[in-house]
Length: 113
Image (cartoon, rainbow, N blue to C red; front, side):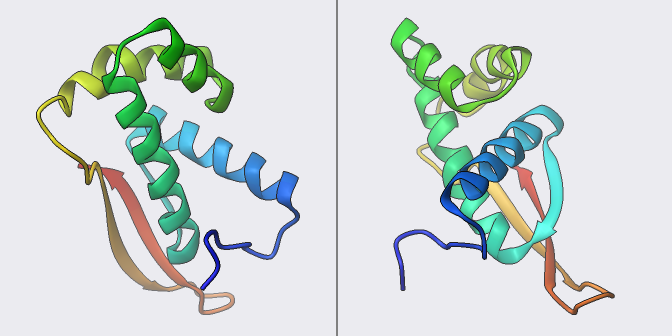
């Protein structure tokens, strides 16, 4: 198995999509997507939350380099990270919702715990 799933996209498209999905997840708390995408988003989102638990200028700059909206980055450091201060990992939950009607892709909801 490859280290990262390619998701049928070029590298730039995949990175942009994951950045957008992680930003949306942190902004809204949950998103509905396919299971394979959710597993990639979970990995990136948990890295961002772990980074935000270390509340330094360097960590903020690293998070801003990945997250596409400044207000979401502020929310990450001010509200989301302190909520998980005593937790060592596993900040996201994936709940399978069944196949999609059009192409029968396995769908799920990914949400912050």
